[in-house]
Image (tube, rainbow, N blue to C red; front, side, top):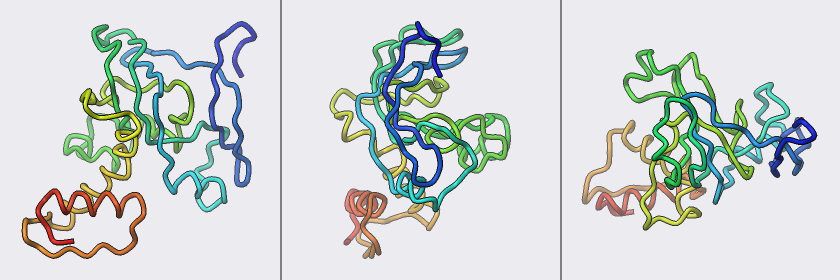
Length: 198
């Protein structure tokens, strides 16, 4: 709960299975090494439904949901270049330790010492603002609308990562995708981009 005179914002908060509410909470700050992002678009993943129906329970509540968000950096914490203020960004929702073998290989999602996982065990992007480590705020080109960018954080990146783990996609290959949800739809697009027959 924010102090009575502190600025507040709207956020979609999870309080346990069957209890998801729109509430007023304190606006986060950009701590050392972090940026504060004004969320311009957030996508819903099936994960939020799993939280709401009790299928996914990570033991952290209340928490602001949302791991697919895009917006504009409005503040930079100590140690972050102030030129990032005004930058259009996509939120990468894993913040690993940065020093283990997994993090060094670019597989922060496997880090055993996660510092944050936004929308899962750390406050996420279904709010007006989110504070994340500066390295989790990925620059977006002007040509990409925020609403188009938000799902990239999970649905698109999961599809690309999964296809690479399965051996990659090569032009001319036939690809069959079972289940065309957000990840499946992204995989269709990625496979077509790679020149596959889908």
